[in-house]
Image (cartoon, rainbow, N blue to C red; front, side, top):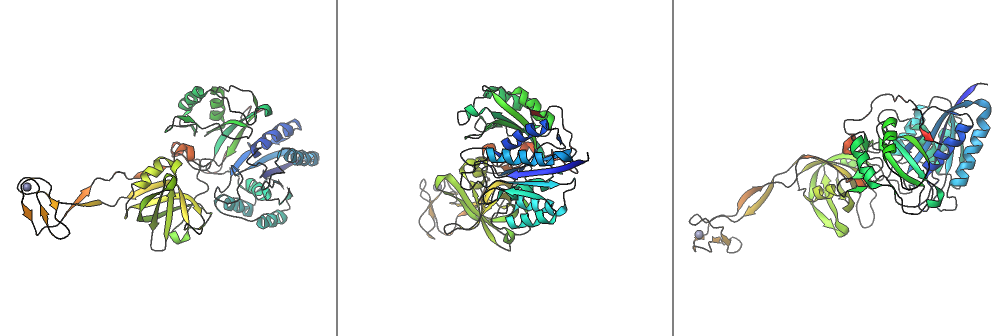
Length: 446
Ligand SMILES: [Zn+2]
């Protein structure tokens, strides 16, 4: 019987109250393996644009890429559709699952471009359907079928070039919603032992572990890293204090900054399109309620607001020290203008390229006794309180102060990083060129 290749993409199965699309992938890995399907890649976990207003919780779409005997095809599809239906939170408004079956080894350029646009911009279901028709792919949508967008995007994002891995461990259903029990000391030790090849395990600023999500989803913890071997090794070092039902290694675009696109001028900053942009600070930062910091940058083409929210930690502190005239590069998602606020870049990173001098004007010193003089009012000169000397024809002196920030690159705190944000630890570790994927022995359980 001839062999076939299929890319199966799916998305939008979870809700704030339950589920996780990665879990459906993990279930399918077990079921399809039993059917003698051969996976040709790790399940791909593709994080889509975190700035679209209608995103699902983690905004992660999944793709399983497989080789199989042609006569298994109907059964594979049936298992996939049933598993999706049984595990998706279909009653929840805003959960609109979709699944795409794309056959053939080659992914067309147009589908790859569609995927890129879904990661760093906005696409429509109409575009997705058009491509499905053009390339003879099949899709099943539940409710509005919006998940077909992410499904096709996951198919099209083949994770060439930079990519990372994540091992995800799942809880037994009895424990869903309960506090997660994992030995935190073992996580700090694992982080130390596997650094810099794993990332986002702990938040050093708050000495807090961040591999366990909060909320009712089935994930117990996830470890991110550069290779399948290192995430598996890290996994064996973490001590769970509750049963693990299953685990799977995923290949992902997490931690790669895939959502950010550089713009040449600020007039090109558009809502929902995450950007990297340069500009000069045009208004000094101000603190708004809830301890968020707002400032604006400009260039010849436009002026744009930037915001560093309270949980961004170090980023917020740096933003607060900026001065008019500083030349900076900003990284972040773009919020659409509202009645109350203009178009705003929500900062994930800042690079301070050139610092303007900080000038303050101070009263001069008394030339007789050395004490700093007192002003006698605007344009009325100065007087020494100690020796009584008066000075009429002198003004304030310009003093160059030390800046409280340094040129450099600042990234939002680990705890507030998005799935796609490239952390410090990954700089210099980017993968280039065609991805060479080799499935290690035992990349999933069961
Ligand atoms: Zn004096």
